[in-house]
Image (cartoon, rainbow, N blue to C red; front, side):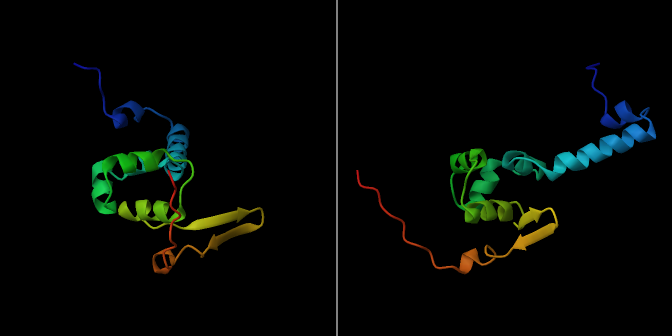
Length: 117
């Protein structure tokens, strides 16, 4: 026997209080995660996303590691996972959903500056 047991078996003797704390922790962990973990939680591979985004797999890997990116790229990534991106500003007295980014696909594309070698 390999010593592996189902999670339910491991937690069956937990008190109700401990089960409640575990459930709260699961919710908290699911509420915040890096892009790569989000993709894995949605059971998608980098190759799957690359096909939907019409890029190669290394481009998806690079995007997942970036700390700074265009909102449009993040939105495309989230939509490729089947979601939608909302940007919310949180203040002590409440939250505001920022709507500037809702029509990014309809905005005219800006020409990119070329670098000289």
